[in-house]
Image (cartoon, rainbow, N blue to C red; front, side, top):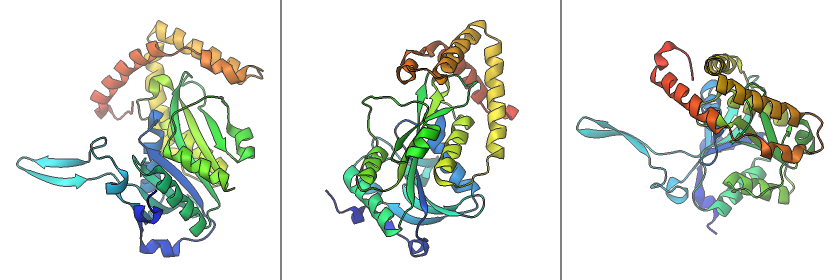
Length: 306
C-alpha cells in the first residue's frame, strides 16, 4: 500500500482547523440518483458563505483519466480552460457560522486502502467528532411521498430515527463504504446516508434529493442549512412532474400503484424488510417522464426546472 501521506497536500488553512469538527463527505462517481451528491457539493461550496481548502488530493495517483476525462474549451483554433477533476477537503460553515469539514470530489479509481488511511489520518489529526457521508440510489418509490433514507454505521440513535429500509444484501462497494468500515473498526462515530430517489427521476437533478440529504446530515450532526431556495426549486420541479402525470391515465395508475405499495410498506408491517423488493420497477413511468423531462431541458428558457 502506498504511503497515505503521498496522496494529498495540506494547505496553510490546515493549521487553523479547530479540533472536534464534524466531517461531511460526498463523492461522485458511483450511484448519484437525483444528483444528490453533485447538488450537495455545489450547494455547500456556493451557498454557505465561502470556504477554505484544507487539503487537495493528487489526480495523477487517484484518477483514471481515460475513464473520467477532464474537459477543456476549444476556441475556434486553440485550446483554453483545461479543467481537471478535483478531490479536496474543505473548511466551511453552516448557516449559523459553525465550521465543519467537507470532503468532496470524485471517488478515487485507485489506492482505496491508502485513501481510507488518509481520511482516518485526518480524523485523528483534526480530532473529528463524526464522519457523515451521503450517496443516493434509485428505488421504486413515488415522488408524491417524502424521500426515505437508509442509514449505516454505528450511530444507533440515527439509524432508529431515520432508516426506513434495512436490507440484508450484497452490493457494490464504494470508497466511502471502505472508509466507514475502517472507522467502525477503530471505534469512530460514523453514519452513511443513502437517499432513496424515485427510479424514474434518478437521471434528473432532483431538488428533493438535496433537501433530504441536508435534512439527514443535520439530524446526524446538528448542523443547520438554509433550504428556502432549494424548496422553491423543488416546488417548481414537482409541479412539472404532476402536470405530466395528470395528463396521462397510465402514468396516474402506475404512480398510484407505487403510492399504495409505499404506504403499505411504511405501515407497521412485520414483512417490511422484504416488501420493498416487490414494488413495480417503474420502467413505464421512467420512459414517459424521461420524454417529458428531455422536452423541459430543451425548452429550459421558460424559467422552470425539470
